[in-house]
Image (cartoon, rainbow, N blue to C red; front, side):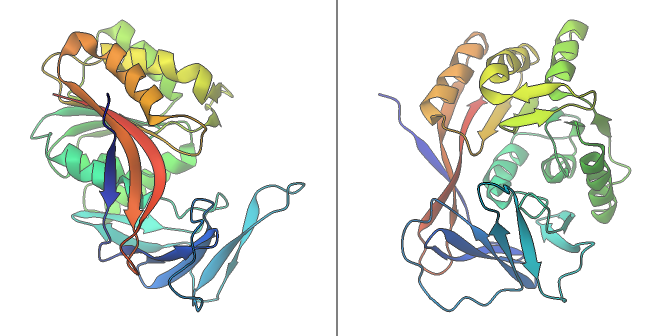
Amino acid sequence: MTDLTTLIAEPWADYGLVDSGHGRKLERYGRFRFIRPEPQAMWAPASDDWKADGEFVPGSDAEGGGRWQLSRDVPEEGWPLGWEDVRFQAQCTPFRHLAFFPDMASHWAWMRERVGEDAEALNLFGYTGVGSLALAAKGAKVTHVDASKKSVEQAKENAALSGMADRPIRWLVDDAAKFAAREVRRGRRYDGIMLDPPKYGRGPKKEIWQLEEGLPGLIGDCAQLLDTDSRFLVLTVYAVRMSALAIGELVRQATAHLGGEVVMGEMAVREEARGLLLPTAIFARWQK
């Protein structure tokens, strides 16, 4: 029988899940508080009196998407936050999140324990770079790949904000799957790989990414970029009808030749009001 693990992101100075329930969640991001939809918060909230600086209101089925309702105090250009020695810009995006994923903190801390000076790490679908900077701060050489030029520019700005503009980070605007395949052909290897693929996306040349179709091949390529001296592969999957057992077995088979072990399960954020756990994603990670 395979045991499932729950990775818990605890509150920190600049972020916390304040309360949750009735399909919504109340979070603090620095000095601001926001309300966002959360279908998995099926329970009742600790309090019915939520005060927030903004709320994301989802659109109807016909409209899709949604929109933010913000107070005048919330700066459109964003505001700085920090996690340990990494600084980055939070911002209310059209996609209902705030330009980083706080539940990833448990992965950031775990990976930082497994890299040292001159370790080489690959961050696929790297978004705004908080994970890349978390590793670079420990001396790792990082290759950061994302199909969005805007996201990569934001990642560079976060590096400057963190005082890490001169760190050995390769910032690449590229299709993650195609890049990984090219790296395999080049005979490259990495000490650690992290990837957070979306359910659906487009590359810089309009390449189409669909998770269920593309993930097996991508994980296979990532496994070929590791060797028996490598240290980790971290896969996170959000918002899909997919099981942690399924992605765990995919990673287990792909990395069987490397030895080590695979851990799989759910990711969650701890609520400050009652300590309950709000599930956010599933994960699988190989470790040596």
